[in-house]
Image (cartoon, rainbow, N blue to C red; front, side, top):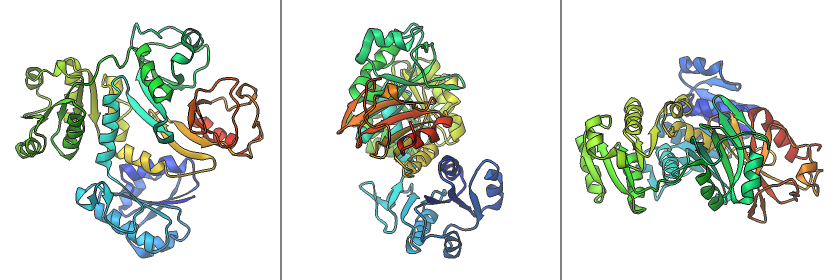
Length: 448
């Protein structure tokens, strides 16, 4: 595929970095020469200094053979015009990052010439909502229309699984527990085997049917606290949208914001929420409003430092689950190490969402796993695979990968050594960075 990206900011940089690892024909256009030079050493793609809305520049890089055009600058207007220009010049799929609600109606972009529009705030709210409602989870991924769920959870000390090998766990629970597909231990990401021992503070990823995965969190001492009360720092559009969703689900909500006008607007729009004018990092305010009784604490203000400080305070004061909004993608893997449950980056969510539309070979969709460099791949089994009809135990499957779920005629099955894959099946595979290419080759019809 040929992919053209407009904007070398945080979203464009991350998108180019992810896609260029899979595709060779990636072009990144950036009008700021200093910014382009600053990212050039970290990217393996073609960089062009110029305007993404210029017909001349777009003609020069080639729109007629462009498979995916993604405009992801900080300006909605530039992204819209760039996509419309690319559309006129023949680009196939045009994706725009558009944040302003006035351009949407019922979450659909009102403008022509753009195939897909993404609002980073909506994506962030969706990610936060998933993590909150799955109270034991640090992150949630879904595949095959939600039939396959992948949940990350932290192993708590003295949990049922602590100190046990996967072989022992499977012998005692069998199919009552979802498959542990990947473990992040410190700086290391592991594809576990039967003799792998589960340790406290491991970040484990479970895969399988939604209900099975949700029930399995119990064994890791996760998910025991139901979601009935949530405190939100930030009465901006994102905070109000999240509060509205929570209220509709029957959750009691308190919102804190330092801006009196935002508080007034939130009070008018959210009749059943308690809106407080104050600082989200004010210890006295948090304590007096019962932060220790909160099942969830979310900070989505525009000030990144406030979000981090508020969540750290809430965690120390006894809040159930803390979710922090950050702008810098490199903060996402760091904050859980400080004690926060989950960190969400709208920019990172945006780049991940757009990258999922880059198809290659048998891959249907792909997502990054826990920002560890590993990937979750959904792949189709084709008739050209030479190993069809054989059991998985007979196959030389790539060592840095594991099959987490199998879909046969739309039904989710947990894979076992005796599982036989047939043409038309789909699989969800977990692969370390070094194993992704081997997995793609395996399902493209490579030798067994």
